[in-house]
Length: 622
Image (tube, rainbow, N blue to C red; front, side):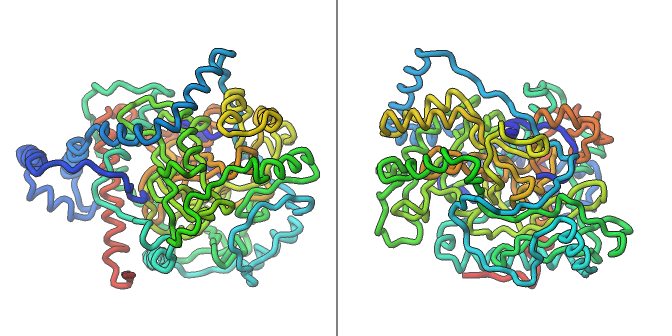
């Protein structure tokens, strides 16, 4: 299955921050800022606005919410500026790299028609995952740091493992506020102590939503309502108490008494993830452990060696000295992070820039997606999963992957704290973030077993995500990007014509537990390292909006899932047809949605500020 490029609808069930940009910003003259301030001052009573900003969301009336939402959206509208200058500067830097690639595509177009990829089937989360991975006959890819948690439970026989999980469960007392502060302290400490992050990763949050994020989120919702086409934006703004009350809606807050099933499902002390059950009225005796919770936890993909001996041999050839894609531009630099991004001498960055040619740009005011380590990965609403591809430096490079051209670095650090939870015995487990994560941040990799799609059985088919789509265009385009021999290109084309996927049914990580949402806050992107074989592909999950503590992390399972589960979706998002107030939300215009999301972001930030940023227990690391 391939992740959808636009939001779909489906059942909320078990399945599967913005790091501030370092791009140069246009500095506007003081008179421009003064004119903007004067325009707002003429429209609004600023003293009243400031008082409304300081009020708790639950204390504001409907009319006050309308006024504040209007003001917040208007400030964003005034901040919107065309980024033509930035885009032109970037285009000039990469033009020399991408011009030969454009010529290649023109030549290929003359040879034959462009073939579009066929959408694959999507997750059928209603089916139970059964069986346990044995781990035999596997090619193990490079591992991440691992310190075994001796108190954790090893996965073995399905029934025995479920019994062990149940006997290990216990009631515990947990306060979300303390957990959020502790998570923020730990995240800050990890960034401060890590020399590769300290001076490079910046986490900044504001009560005002970023203008790009607001435009993107509004367009995604309107595309969803219009089945891929924009809804009319000339309609008047129609807000009701219901719509603005939803903007005040707090994140899920469990009771203080929770059943903790596992303290650490990863069995890795470096990356502990607890598992809770918050089903009302549930006891230790009535606790049911679903088959879906029993799987071998892994932080990297694995390839069943015995099944694909031909691919195993080709991997060795692809990673040989003459065929591997790696850089040596920054070796011996001595800095914790070296500047490979936008470095014309970096072979990996050159490949990154060449792959940008594949990206369709429906709106020229939105820059194409960049895959730089510490810049936000911003994905425009109409971008396609098939075309939005990055290339990253690796441990085989002179920089060892510690550079500005490796978006896999942050997921490998495992600094973002999450937990698994469930609130309904009939629903699967979901994932909550315990700390604030900026939009555009790659927070984790989605892992599993690498398989040819044709080799999947019915159970596996419903869980798999494509990493190599079997796209004829990719098979023709990618082999021409490197200076490989004709024989190597022929073999590579053959591999790229075959659909390969990641199957997490028995083997994977926390990404497999993210629930579906009609308005997801995570998005899949594909990133390659070393080359373009299935073993070189990595599926990263990137935040599309600012994630605040307690927010559930969600995915879009795709269009086919929406068609199958449309009447049973439990996400209850504002544009979900199962939301009892859907008819009121679908009447909102473009400006109405902008006001809604501007107010929602403001309310989330204020709760984050009150619970975490203003806490006396919050630490500052200098």
